[in-house]
Image (tube, rainbow, N blue to C red):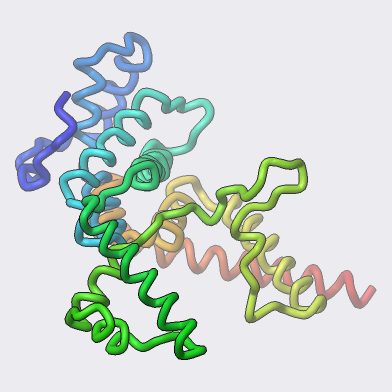
Length: 273
């Protein structure tokens, strides 16, 4: 299957019913044939379009949407081939993670800037260091532009292209006590021990409450609050109408509220006893 899928043709794809899609999955899980795999990929290609739209806004313009889409399709293929209904929940949730991870991993491993641009960025950084030594402070963009005989806007543009995409979960160092980058970031809103304990209680209650929801409602909440999908997109993912998704969302919120109130009441009663 070609990996440069034309997203403009998405509306022309015939979406299978839930029963037809389940039958396709059953066939693929038994035979693992390429033809059935490609049919599944076409059915879920909208997930790539969704992730590409979310990821693109945070990347430099030098990275083309065609490249990102290609990496996303590779992630989708990987998700279809590795999906196991016995180990994973819904395929859509599993695929979103694999697609996004595939795109970011590919981008991290490559340098999209031409050598001439990379060289110019290096010269600008060197100029900044020289001016910093001369002024005893960080020079302004206008001062750097004048020093290099360039337009300030061009300086800003080039420096904005100098981006390195790194996962905050990437480890620094190779020793046993090496830390992930996220562990080195200072929390400016760090809670006191009492607040931390209270927040942990809330998180624990929420996790337990979510597990008590029906699977469909639980997946809906994950897609809406964790994956930031719209009600319309969730409807497409779950093969349901947008109005039905809104109804299920309201039901899930009400159930969560009742479960959390019950948990707080039980915790308060235990503390009094």
